[in-house]
Length: 164
Image 1: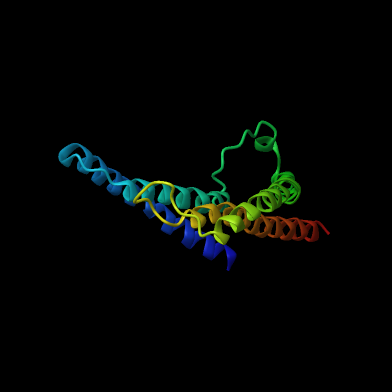
Image 2: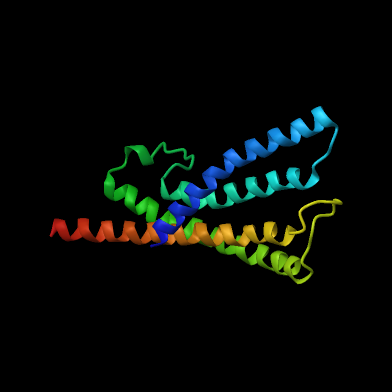
């Protein structure tokens, strides 16, 4: 269920890249062809980029496409890799996500309390939504990490039972 939700979010967020390109082209055309500025559109590109990045973190983890230096990992057997993944998810990824949530949640709550808007005239009046992506992306990443840790634990249990 978590995997399906992360997959849908990641796929939807990927389409935002096309939206960013389109809106950026429109902003450039408005600026150079008509001499008009488009602050709200420029900020919309920033919002789309933030959404794509923050939801893409968990999606990329799910697909095992994060960059890693695997000098030792590549030489390990399946059980060794499962142990590294399980420990990495439980003792590195999830605690880091919890720290990010703990630090960013008050920041987002404060922004929500004043319904913080753009400091630019004509900008997007929803900075509080942008700041909410920080704890939300950490929560999504932690959920995906826990899901993958569970899967690794099940794999280790199954391989142990197969040995006996």
